[in-house]
Image 1: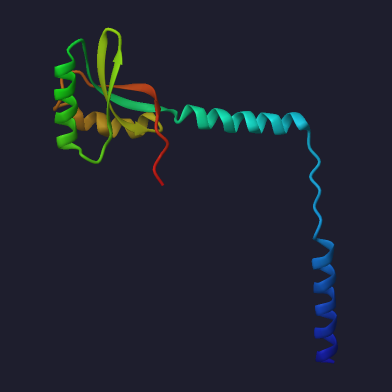
Image 2: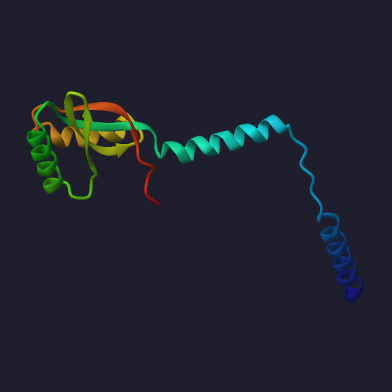
Amino acid sequence: MMKKLVFIWLLLLAYQSKAQKHVQVIGDANLDSLVLRNQELNTISNGIPGYRVQIFFGTDRKVANENRTKFLQEFPDVDAYLIYQQPYFKVRVGDFRNQLEAQGMYHKLLTKFDKVFIVPDKINLPRL
């Protein structure tokens, strides 16, 4: 009796595996083009919308670099970016996905730098 049940179970398993070999997905071609377009934009942009903490804003490049260096000495594991938007230099730090994440760094920097505020920016993708 037990051998008969095992045999039937194996037959059902073999039949089920044969029945599941072919899968056909029917979709709109426009959907495929949108997915491809989204993939292209993501590879071009090299970033996602997020927030950074700005610690310097001014026209003196030397002072901007000094602020960046001061930050990196205090927080070597956090990225710092020197940005030039004519005629101003900006130093922004961190790659935060939301304002709540940025607030932690903001509060740490309030006593160390003169002008500290959270700004929306394109950030680098999180490291895995």
